[in-house]
Length: 610
Image (tube, rainbow, N blue to C red; front, side, top):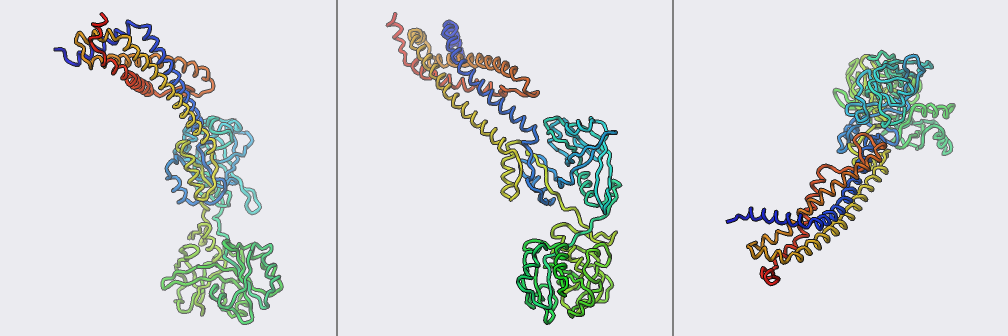
């Protein structure tokens, strides 16, 4: 007895022999299917190739993957680390002030060129994807324009000169940098030099007056500037509204409010002398600098008024308790006149910032323990531990310190201030970073990153519009392809259904004879199905061949505009199997009606026709 597998193979061979016998009709069906399939493959190849080529160009061009802040502001390291950890961020490095990033470069005996200094770090896609390595200490990478202007190439050495003006003198520091690579033109057409972040930060610090010992660049440690929350004005005669308004004109101050004795004591910890009037001058949500105080003193000259600044919420942690702190720098004569404690450090002066007299305090009587020096911690406006000389005691419940010291500590709200034991003074640390250079992993990540940054109140610059145009083009081409594909599938299905159904009608006698000689109903059902599958395989083969030939012509025509590895018309390898599977499914589904019709043929019909 013949098994079912062998019987199915005989039916398959019979179907193939019948197609060979009617080769003209078979050729017509295969050509019709290939004529539908080849244009669909070409259309899909154009979509995939064009979009991928555009994506490649956008990915390689730093303009499209880069995000940078639109404004210059201070970015602390913690915020930058959080940003770097966001999904879609491939690389991020801080940047400095644009004015500090300009540097003079020269090669050999050529004249120096002023160029933009850009920090880089490990994983920088702008460098790695444009023919360069990441520079280390003493190395740099040049843009193509920078290399052209300097007349240098990879492997040579250039000289970087950093200039600054300090105390009326022009000072210069030099560093030799080895050029390890020159970027391709697609990385940008601006004259830029890329170096490690440490070198960029050192350049900024040198321009701000600091010394960089490890590079041999001379300079000083930056002292904190003075800033305050406001200024108190005491006057023996009341100030009329016109005079009070005049105090905020051209002084940088915005408000001048009168104070009661209670509000004065609450703010300063001092008693308001009898017959004196107090006024609080400040900038809401802002800091008062020393230039505003000097302008105010000039306006009040000849009135016998007292001007002293204040800072809110400053406290002093002592080994035996915690105290509110008030800065007071006035002359001994004025202190006695106001019946206030006499500060041993004298009057307020901006020339006192570099002197050792600032680290002093006058403590309340109940906390004065005759110690010559205490290690204290300032809290509130800034937390800072430093040694403080005990200069005396008073009947106040508030610790008194020099107003200059209070102003320098108050600056810690805006900039980090630290104590330097070597110099015995306060040092103004760098102010964080003033920007960043960020690259997304792909151009598709950029819109989401931009939306995240803008929702946090940071306006950024990115080529979102160009990226969205590519995404719209991709979606539009996809819809167009599927619309044409549906029409093609419907047409091909109709051709196959009609052809196979007509073949069954034409072969009714032959199928009836096959039934008479013992062919089962199931085998007759499979006969048109096998024929449809064979036609599909041949149609896919010829259609794919037609696609490949035309794709070669298209890519050759546009080859001069493409980079290596790019193509206008290209399909991934897996699409051939997808096309075969889809076409087979279509052919099998189309043959089911004909197969069902074949099972209805009565074997007696063959005898009647004889």
